[in-house]
Amino acid sequence: MKNKVFFSKPLSDIKEIKSNFFKDNNKLYKQAITWNKIYSRQKKRKKCINCNKNLPSYDFRSHYVKYKLCNFCGHLNGLYQETDKFYQMMYVSNKGNKFSKFYTYEFNSRVKKIYHPKLNFINKVIPSVKSILDIGCGAGHFLKACEEQGLKAIGYDVNKTSVNYGSKLLKKNKIYHFDKNDFFKKIETSTSQIITMFGVVEHLQKPNKVFEAFNKSKSKYLVISVPTFSLTVLLEHVFKNVYPRQLGGVHTHLYSDKSLKFIFKKYNLKTAGEWWFGTDIMDLRRSILSSVPKNKKFSKIVNEYFHDITDSLQNAIDVKKLSSEAHLIVKK
Ligand SMILES: [Zn+2]
Image (cartoon, rainbow, N blue to C red; front, top):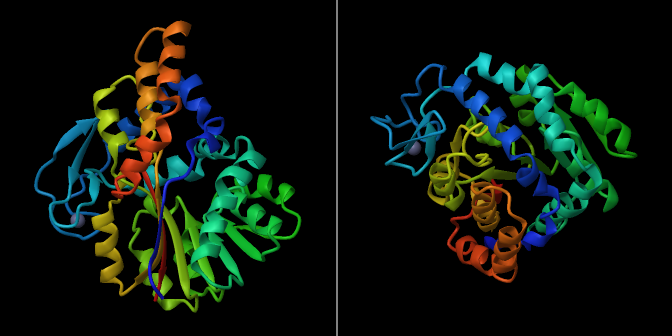
């Protein structure tokens, strides 16, 4: 089976969904800074979270956090550890509920515009999709998309609020709560044809254990999406008063084409499919508009300027695999 690679996705699809990044810049910015300050008080990270080689110094400091691009594998590391305390605060405690609310905003619209395309990508790569286990399923957006396409899938999440919320919206597919300590066991004991983890791997204290656990399972394919080192990261470093949605807050490290290749090779995994697309150009427009005092006429000029060029500029970044997100399908 040849690796099937896809690029780009029309940004108009998600413009409405992400519009709260514009409207709520100050609120989101403050939240990210609070999380960054807590993260920067955790124990120092000495080795690359991806390849485990030493990280001797740092390259830049963005919004209170020091970062190092690993010389060996090309992974971008925040130089502090995701300690138990940090993890607890982000995902399980009351503060974590805020995080889950953030993602359950506009459920149906997200299912249609974000999660159906994910399933379509899987269908294009894997010839006959039979059963799916969705780990870290949040409120079950992907399970809903599967349900709407007549596909059986079950999901697990550590956040009870998300699980309760999602259970009410699903008709056939089921969603369950599981404990953080059962996370890798759930992957290891999987008998589903496919395991999916969208926006999950990068949030784990030991992300590499996902690949180790997948190798022990009976599942054939692993589908992940991860945030990647991209133009948005550079913009965030320069536009200091704009909400950093890519690096910082819940994202303490970022993958790259090179660091993904490294980790798949280490665990003997073959890439069956890739889909690279990002929101870098939308982030550029947002950075410009959020950096000047509100002025309707200027906003109109900026929006009109970007209107016809956003997708083509983004495509130029995507095809080089330098976009802000990557979807990958690997098999044993
Ligand atoms: Zn590394």
